[in-house]
Length: 422
Image 1: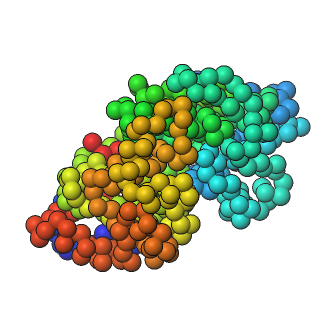
Image 2: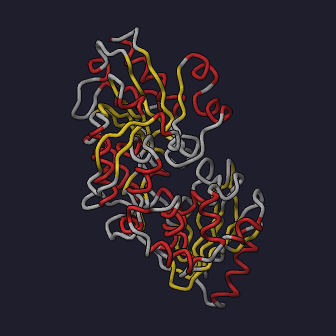
Image 3: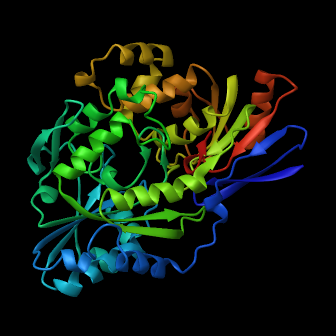
């Protein structure tokens, strides 16, 4: 028997799987990567040796209005480590600079005060100016041209009016943008709902190059790069993380070149050989990404890449924040087939909120049975969306076995957001 450990909320779920049925466990190299220094030292090294850019302290000379874009409550960016070092670097040469942290919520709900405290720490919340982006607040936005795809580019005024625009974040495989980090801090991070919807259209979501690990020829990435250039994103600090959300490498410098360097590093660690199976067990890597159903489009996509047609995907997901999107809930409550038919007939200039997540979820539901394992969410909410539910992995496996028969194979992807399945 193999003992399998799967991230769940801020803890783990353990289950045993017979060796006769276990096809494989797909784990990225990042989970066992030994960093060459401590977290703070890694960040300092990156800031002192930026990629294709002067040091941040040089860029900050004479700048009065500095904006640092940071990720929201759904991302495990170690801001308590990175933010003080960014401020230290800026004020080394520009002590009077007004620094504002702009929380990039994208199309998500606003980050709460409690979540800000958890992210920044009490002292940072007290001492620094922090603004939470709201993509629906038109008065906080300004037009910045048109995306290569034709959509209107509308960006938060704070960023556009800054003397120096910086972004911090982390890099991981992303199911349709190729990788997170870098230019994603702008689009979808701090743009309007109109811009997010234009970029997340059905045509792009279905594009063969809009997938994990792919940047070249990816139309969503091209839109994002354009947005970053229009916003004049001057400098980034992006980190790579291990299974415990600890920094294992940091990349700082030019918003394009430093990001590419980080993507190359992450890709080398994230690519895993698929092990086709009848049942695939996965997770979103635990907190903070497993707070709702909405975010699990990521782990489900990774699982689908190595699950046989008609198979079963089991997602270990706390979902303590419920479905995470009323729009996604309403879409899927009407049935996956109906949702997909409507979406594929929707013009790219008329994209509907959370259509993109629905499109991917519906695509998966039309081919696989998906069982969510959770004891922190009302199961009826999840069932309304077309998924099945269980309180334990053992319960989910028993249900899965009835669907695929006695001669089944199981593949486990403990952290579905950290891998690129090939």
